Image (cartoon, rainbow, N blue to C red; front, side, top):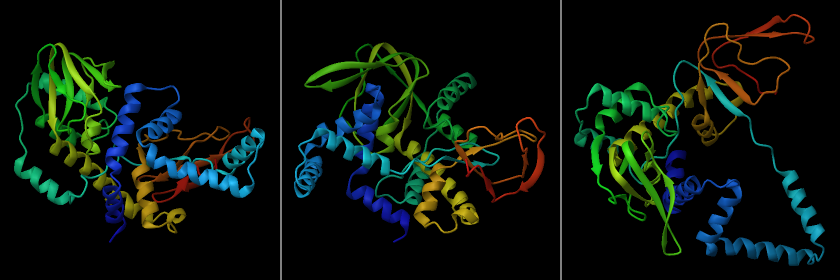
Length: 340
């Protein structure tokens, strides 16, 4: 079993898709000021039985250590634990001609090739005016999950979307139902409701240009909220199969391109396949015109760059007030910015 199959098996066994989708959609709906604490509290309320073992382990550890009564001591121990944690790695960029792409997991338990074959046999396109196509493209480019698709992939989604119209009070999606479609608001005001303690509470309002419904499709999870039409509403809908295939295609293409490329980077040759795939999924493509200054000496750095195409000239000056001189040239497969 290769590493990707092993990871997919783990995801399926532990229903990770559903867990992540419910958590992320709840986070985006509530928009808490402290998302980390919100996630901790959410998991504690949603899965109290799963966290019980962790609490018990902590109590057992305390008993073995001889029950500390001083709360300051406990606080100091926590501080020590935090101090031992490794700092987060710098963001990694790959320099190339092209667009950034977002990594998304494949359909759980389904071979991506078979899923694509099914899509090829069943796909449909719907006629639209040029103005409608441009309008949908503009909306897609603003969506965090879709804005980094290439032009061909965007065209497929635009051609595959179909119009749906709703009257005042109509339910567009219902909390708890399986996700079947992704929606882009053409006109009208859809409102988002969440069932809390048996009562429906309005938490969000969508308007023209907004998109919703992608998380349930991406993670094979039930809808985390209900969306109703407030007045007449028109949306453009995309079926689940097309949505999944296009995003999976993006992920697999990115992995195939970067996996071999990363194997040629000296700094990363010692990494395992899983570690290289993790980096491949995290890479963000950035393209720079000739003579563009990518980083500047003496400034803080938060990115690590790997050159995919082209070359980079490195200059250095002994002091900020002195002129810089060329010290080296880097080419494809080489890197810079790791020291900062």
